[in-house]
Structures are given as C-alpha cells and as structure tokens.
Image 1: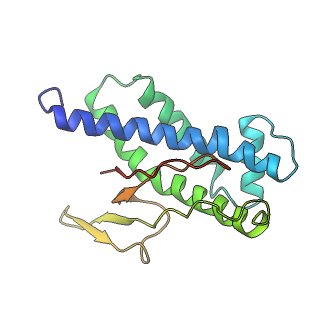
Image 2 (image 1 turned 45 degrees about the horizontal axis):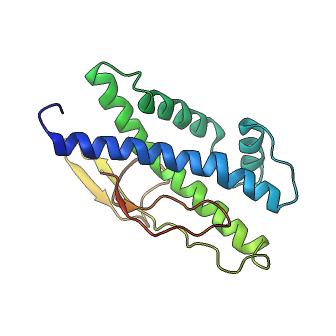
Length: 174
C-alpha cells in the first residue's frame, strides 16, 4: 500500500465513507426519525434498540460490531497489515447492513411520515455480492439472489441526513 498511492487513496476513501455512512445513520438519521415519530431520542444504544424493535435495524449486534470496527479503522488502531486487511474485509462485508438499514428507514418514513415530507430521498440500489467458489475465484451474485450479508462490490452513495437534501454522489466501495 505504501508503494501504491491509488490503492491507499481508495482504501482511505472506503474507510472514511464507511464511517461517515454509519455516523450519519446512527447519529443523525435515527435520532431525527425518533423526533419525527414524536419520541425523544435516547442514547445511541437506546435508539438502536428501538430501531431493531421496529424492524428497521436488521441486527443490533452486527451494528455494534460495525461501530467498533469503524472506530478501529478510523482511529488507526490497526498496525499489523494482516489485521488491517481482515478489518477492511469485514467492513466490506458489513456495508449491506448499512444499506439495508438506510433503505428500511427510508421505506418506513415514506409509509408513515409521507404527509410531512413527500420528497423523501430514494432508497439505495441493491448491490451485487461476491461469493468465493471452491477454486478461490470470486463469483458475482446478482442482488436479487444475494443475501443481505456477504462481500460486496458495486456502487452506493452515502445516505443524506433525514429532512435535508444533499448533493448526489457516487462512491466506489470496491
């Protein structure tokens, strides 16, 4: 990575965007949704528990794992190359969790809060996932046949905070 500036830049961009997407959902979107629902946002864990009970967060445990992983990646606690590569791979595996959570929240808002804001942002497109074959080669699986977890390749854009508009952007997550 030290010899490949483009790779280093792509990895850094992925780490920053992974963290930003999680921050935006957990620290902005979820508390704003609770306010729109006329609830008082609580601690991050209370908010996440509420989202899981509503069916908007697929797995609280996976979210906490993603949060801890984000902290390790963002704050550069990983010094060993193998640990760093493993953490990046796991972060890539958790991207579908972030996208699915965002899409569930947007769907909920459209269904239950549409009268307060008819122009909710669109859901993020499903992404193709990769599975390793017995020969070690990656095989792309179309989003319609891929599970909600697993490796991911494709494009996504970070979610906008609830009730604001942001400029569209596309980021590579490969």
